[in-house]
Image (cartoon, helix red, strand yellow):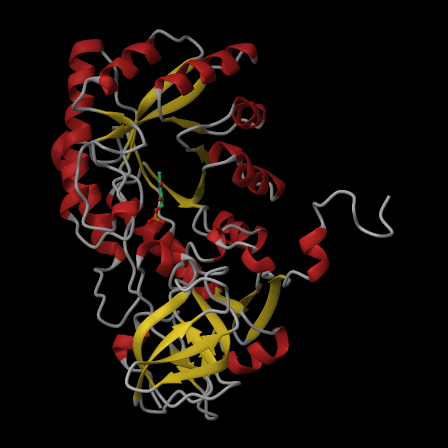
Length: 446
Ligand SMILES: Cc1ncc(COP(=O)(O)O)c(C=O)c1O
């Protein structure tokens, strides 16, 4: 049976239903993957990741040739994934020494790495500069001085962008808003702190101020906040050029484009965002993209979110007559904290009986010791029984990246599916992994 178009929008490209009525991802039977690799299992479809990367890079460069697309590795990072991103010609946004280390270990070209973060430690900045990262995106005055010192000690002139807070309201969850004045990130333009940062940066010879960055939030569906943010930041850039002679050589309106998590979500295609950003920059500056500042986008979720599907096995089913039916799966908030953190909504598909009709309202919960460990509240699903395989689409971004060992849960395995072949790219943790960092007190350990 064909998958309905509304459901297709939350699944990886090419997802289908097999003759056995199973969900097929990247040409692989999802139920067989669950059997072979165990559950919870995260399945990434390689073709979807590559297609999204190309949509961004080709689309942006067609409209604005002097452009770079960075993958925001906080969404999900692993050597296999970074290899794909590298092959596709993207750069990388990292926000910690850890993300930087993983990128360096896979020989990601360091000149294409941008280092973000609102409280970078001296050691992190030293690591970044020692490996020649392309840009440090400076968030505050403390960091500006610290970075200048670290760069001067190394006899380097480090290219930087200043992260600005344009004061733009993006319509998303409060925890995902980053461009409003009351934010922990960036230099507010409205208060004069952005101008102060420019003046300070110009006085620091070990820093080379190339331009500005602004990221207004995440899971955004509207184009208008981007246009507004670009207008404000480019207005500021013009003022700085006039007053202080600072030429704008690079500009980034960040990432944050939304994806469909449920069949009622209806984001516009990435191509719309890319075209709008390029057109707005062109309209406001006259730059064609062959001349003028380099334009940088840094999507995370919209590259990997739809590519990843989480597979869980159904266990206990608790019916409370006239109240609620709880369906417990073998994962939950330890591998996906998003519903608890942001009230994020998901859909579930019965991967082993795809054509079964929904007939019962249930609440899908995890196995961890928190009442808030709810994956989906009130979702209509076919009759379920223990052993069924539930697939949660759109699980590729910020699930595993935010996963924990709460309740000493084992972090799930990850497979990469492509053309009917599944490659294990991260093994499931073992119980012994839970003790790896512990020192002493174990019988038999010195
Ligand atoms: C500075 C910055 N850039 C890019 C991103 C990526 O956002 P998204 O995954 O929503 O595209 C984030 C995410 O929070 C961010 O903080």
